[in-house]
Length: 426
Image (spheres, rainbow, N blue to C red):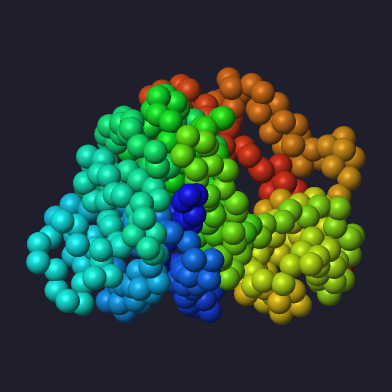
């Protein structure tokens, strides 16, 4: 019999969000709504289990309201005959002094369960760093799989927990559950290196599937092996774009499983970069242009979304966007026209539409300054000569000094043009 389960990770319930109040509230609700959708799916599809690979919540001060709602969803699964297994990660460590130790969602070997505790027999939280084995049974009591998991006891686990997992002699599918950073995996650089593991840790074992958490981008973690990150359940900021959800997995003994992505997030972040802007000094025309391009990019999509738009290239409106109030007004207008929950505009890449070559060739102070900036970008000695002595005195390391000075030069030519050349038109 196949072991059918849902692989979730990084729920991050109770995340504290930034941004506009409406966005903060909507995102906070969306993290839990995504989990409820996953539970609904598991019950509807009559799966054997839901596996959550760490970071169930965001911080140790898990709110009472969210804790009660979370427990209710876990019980819904258990009452429907569906196992819920989760491992602790760096945000929800399992040590005795941490909140995970007091969630009360699983028996975890405790004696004399109360009459109302029967549902907890289908719930297990892997809190300890030593791997534990749980045999999964279907609704009729037949064994369908073995899940081996381990958890982070602290918020900064430095040990390689995957190295302690072992082979099992069993006719059932074996699934590993762990919150870890696999060395070299795509997008891992955006995360702290907790419970680090390597491809070799998974190559030595013949598990049917590995359900991993920690990296918020879904995908295969080890080439050629059934080792997968589910990504986080709900995108939390503009860096976590696109559809978010979990993996539906059908595991068979002795064969690697290939998961199917199922979206659950009720809200997605999207990022767009727009250049080749209309050369107009009328904000309404630019607004129409962006609305049209965003609509084309989102053709067919009907879910709730928030946007980050980067504008680049020459535009007569470049100076106006330097007024923070004007930019906020434009963001609000763009949000209304596109239906976005929020729009964040990035306009640093906009430049005034002047003939820069002609400006550099003209016999003016601006031309001389632009020539010096261009030369200093490729001449560290000239850059040091131009820099104020007070600035140079802060650096003992020549390499660090050169890097800092080069960073100060970045965008300085555009700043000079903005400050020295009058804007054309209104």
